[in-house]
Image 1 (cartoon, rainbow, N blue to C red):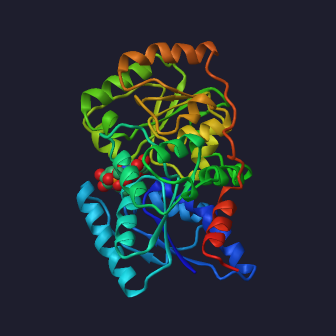
Image 2 (spheres, protein in one colour):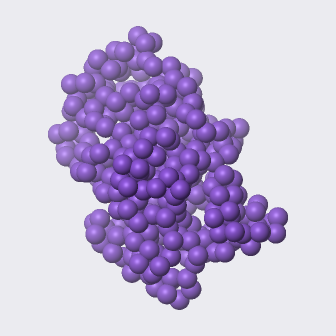
Length: 365
Ligand code: UD1
């Protein structure tokens, strides 16, 4: 059988790497299973895409749809047209999508309309915040998904409420954590470590890219001012996402302990996180990585689609109101942040479970 593996944006790449490896392993053992890696080109810079392929030893994509930047609809439409062409020329047996980016939704729709089954890795999670493009992507993808590979029991409950039968839902764990655990020993000190004279547990890592936080100047400025004012002068390393960089250009926010850097590679970014005092973020995936590494994580969102990072892990939702930042940072410095444990099945063996299940579903021998 031929599986299309879809990847488009930065948070997809660490999720597909172990799946490809697991397919290759089954193939090498003589199973009739193969993949075709399709990069939509939603992210295209070396530092948002290429470096992840190099560092995580992901094979070069078989096909690159080269969609590039654009509005939500421009990107989605471009991806659907381009992927449909590929499928019409040479159909696959299964379209496997991961996560919640525009590429996830666009490819699953194109495939499903041509009668190709869809598997969604990380299906079923919900923030219940329909203003997020990712929530729309998750709902639309799941509405037409045939096989759900889920990261938590909460995802199963969400899917069953939406009418999906549990024979389609497989609780397998988290492929992003497969990649994190596999690469623990390879994490690499970035050059800025020495340039800034960083010391373990003596700096923050910050990432911000959600439209709700970065698309409006005043909101971004208020958040950053509050963070700087409550940081007690501790270094803040801020790898800036391209979306945020555009907005920051006009704002001129400077502080002696605030260090802007460009988007970082996977191995260097996670080295920084692993040795940090705490992480301040509005990402979803990073809250899962901090949970597994046991690093306190302050999330500047009003909701999360990953509740186990809070109930089990080290994540706390601080919200998007800048007034919430001072008390949260005080709590961090007091040492009273939630200590946390590791969610079930986040054990580094998720991708082999997924591929074994697919082989079983397709009666592959
Ligand atoms: C996308 C995902 C989001 C994910 C994030 C991680 C959707 C709806 N959103 O948001 O879930 O958390 O990626 O990065 O799919 N740009 C570059 N170089 C690139 C890619 C993008 O400069 O390689 C610029 C684009 O021109 C655009 C901005 O960054 O102006 C945002 O990129 P876009 O793909 O639209 O969405 P993200 O905000 O990155």
